[in-house]
Image (tube, rainbow, N blue to C red; front, side, top):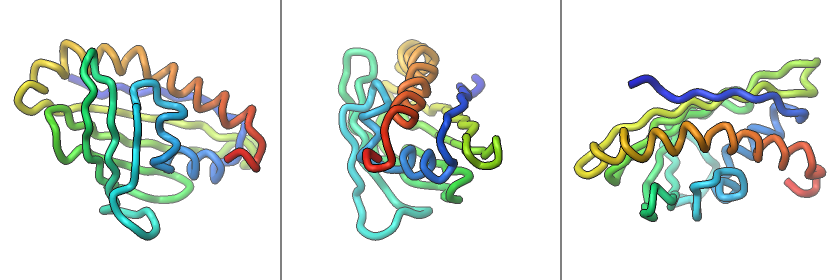
Length: 152
């Protein structure tokens, strides 16, 4: 199956958008299925950094460990799930436009199922993410456009 891809324009500088979307603690603020998220390591974020994200997947609450696979501020980031029955691969891009005052944000997600995840991915996860990703990006846009600099 092909990945799920969604794009939205945000009236904020790419640096602001990038800092927000790559901050693990902020995930539950703009991702509907995220219950909680926390960094698992110390120091600056970079390739190899890990976080634990707990999500509602269908009727289940599932923790999963995500590892940063790409980190190129303020342009792109990538992550992959390293455990659990549902392992996501995420790629995000932030492209400046309007002389760097606005951002074109693209998020692409794909999944790999392990064990029960082989059933969950096509029947529950993909349909849920297809509905959720556009809503997540709208929440992201709303939060970034309606929150002052001090709020981020």
